[in-house]
Image (cartoon, rainbow, N blue to C red):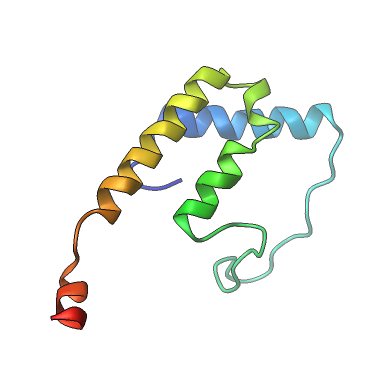
Length: 97
């Protein structure tokens, strides 16, 4: 979760994942030895728009958190991304002027 995440929603998502794993009798992945941050997980999208696309396609989370709430969260993030992308950064000024 990012620093801007609602801690209650983070806990709800974590608990939903735990409940799903128990209900489906899923086996955990192998133990990580050393620093788990050394290698990026190829299954995690690191581009914000790709992460939003993945979130929009979620199949498990809507069974635990109201889909309307998830839709509002997705709309909010899309609006934030649009606002961010509409701002010209200092680096862009430097490159193009």
